[in-house]
Amino acid sequence: MAGSARYTAILDANVLYPNLLRDLLLSLAAAGLYHARWTSEINDEWTRNLISNRPELASKVPLLLELVNQAVPDCLVENYASLIESLVLPDPNDRHVLAAAIAGHADAIVTANLKDFPESVLIRHGIEAQHPDDFVMNQLELRPFEALEVIKRVRTRMRNPAHSAFDLIEILEKSGLPQTAQYLKTHAGLI
Image (spheres, rainbow, N blue to C red):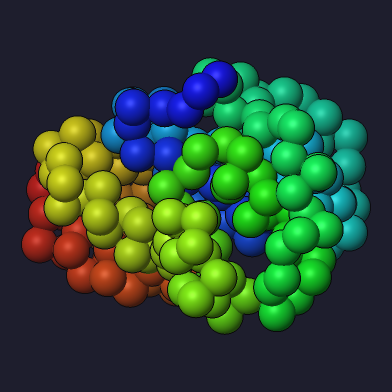
């Protein structure tokens, strides 16, 4: 693929690992607010950590991974491995993420580990690193009605137990999305 006309973001393993954040980011992408991409290597990382931390979920991970990969068309970036060795990052284990962003024509890397993706390196490739809170806020500011509708759908899928808008806001705040939670407090009636 030559690239995407939509804003494209590589989702790092640390934003695919948490269930609610994964659901929110994939739902925003599925609604067409941006194009989400990742790699098989990123999938291996977050699912390996999930199984390590929650071994009782091991039998469910293959189906979960299948659903994640089906959630967004053209999500998997391939043919990026040849770029890895030429890249320099504070954590060499993150080079595959930047390589995928370059090969996948991404505008951003959504990650909770901003320090691992310095602007001085990313700018050379026309890529920026965004914390998931900033990224979700950008979606809310750019297309508020569509993004709020997506968040409402995410909330209504949370069933055991059901969650009110304020329950979801509290969970998002505790999950490291304080700006998003603050914004949603003033729009709780819409979610």
